[in-house]
Image (cartoon, rainbow, N blue to C red; front, side, top):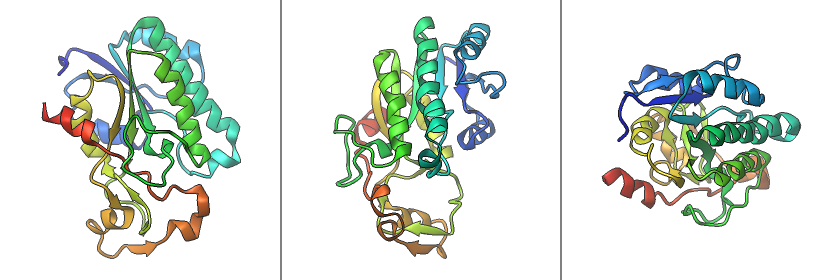
Length: 240
């Protein structure tokens, strides 16, 4: 594990995961800039901040996620934040040889057969996933990087209904933090999530009154029914 004196910058620190991060001890010298301090759509803003902080690692969480349909309604915003923003971050890190860790999504997989390995074919079925894969393309060019294909959610589960016909690897935000500490030295691509379950079964453990709904009926082909991941590689790393 890296020494605590290492400086780590988190973009998107004001988001859902960032709020959880602030409540937990990360045991590193961390920085969570606001959008005014570090604007991912402005390369000069990124470079000025990095030159001031001089971090060893940048963990890129900032971007556009919800609502999912925003990526269809406003593709310019989706492209600017998830593709161009991530490209800017990658350029700035590459110029300074800063280790880059990118929060991507398991939705980049086709979402049909599940248990996808990191080396499997990628084929998103919605605009959100395409925008995240666009970000991955930039990060992949930079060898001093790690792409995390994550499947995470808020704790407690915020919805009153959950999909019974969608299998995935949900894990709560606070469970990601101890994992993140152990994978900072990794490079390449890594699936990160929990055991494969239906979203309904995952949520029911924490809310026995949650209602069952069906993604196929509600969303048609725009929602992946089985984007579940093989997390064998992650388990091996965590055992070391």
